[in-house]
Length: 272
Image 1 (cartoon, rainbow, N blue to C red):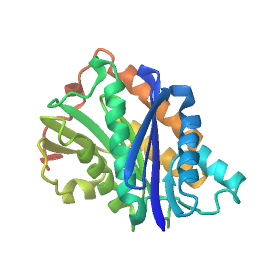
Image 2: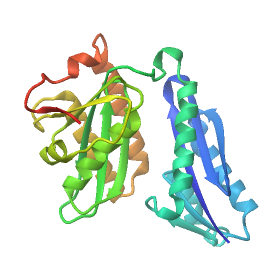
Image 3: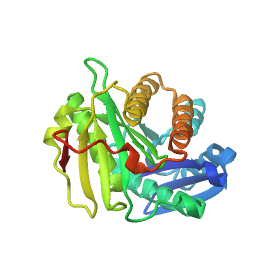
């Protein structure tokens, strides 16, 4: 029997906690631990699940490099485990379940003043990076509330990747804001994006890339380094990069409001 399984994790730095979720076999579980123990807990949850399902073939997706290392070091013990490097159809439902529970748990752990409130103005910058001739694109989303999200997507070209980045912003914040302002330096995304039904009023802004827009600059860095870290298999560097960006956003936002980062309305602004 084939059993898909996905493991996700996040460090809730302000709460000093780590969250690990595992979805597989029809159930989704979560463990909260000290932030510096999150990788050990992820390994423990994986091993326990593998022990309970030794008679089955496991299709595993996880971004936890330490789990990949354990499997590589003990191939005989985990001969029944098939690793996915990207989210394939077989593990998509479990990945989404693990991610949703992880996000929900992290939100509850955050100090009250930092919890994402419903119905507020949010400004987000998105960007994408794709190597010449490549098909694995990195997409990134940076928000004025300190959120950094990155993903790897298989695409046919950079335009498709830029659209994925905008879609990521809507998926994350489309139901949390009265007004969601998305900044993109892609003319293609700006002119072709069709917003799905959402409770927020979505405003799409085109900004010139590499032209001093601080949020666009952060999104650009996030996308470029995510692509390189993925190509060179450097998950630890990826975590460090995202942590640095979160710290930078917090410093940038001190004494400022999201409204200060909304471009002046004009021909480069449209309601999505």
